[in-house]
Length: 187
Image (cartoon, rainbow, N blue to C red; front, side):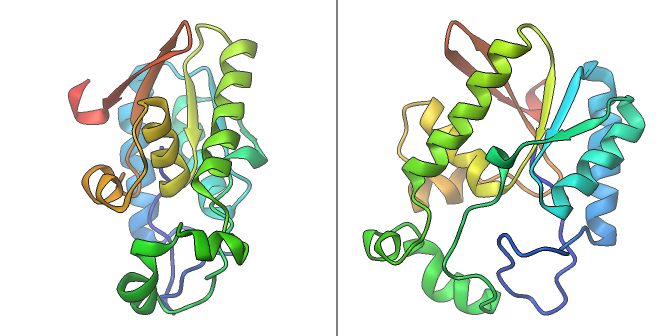
């Protein structure tokens, strides 16, 4: 699940910066997701350590009755572009965020993000077989893992076509290291 909408009045790329919590809309998104997730008999909740995911997880936990735990593997992309105006990011950076020239400057790469998300999923699948786990993370890490697990390349076109809206979730069923993805509307 992607966290709810973030309170970001300065409209900056906040990345891993602390103290970026949910907006009122984000709280409503989390409550709506909680009502849908209540029917799924969630056994465990894991969140990224960032405030927006912890708040989303706590709202859902209040409905489904499961205490969230934190995993650093679920954290937002480590970007070299934090704190720039979102308009500049969307116009100049977003399509080339993962370009080799940016990776050389310290931008976290798609392969590193995919590997840490894969480590998390494998650990959890091994430790809690058969359980229903809710993971609250961030858009790019979720969609990078989604692409990776489908043997697809995470490109700008993939991102535009498949990106997960705030407060929404996907379901992945894991069996014998195979992944079957479903969006929330198809269930």
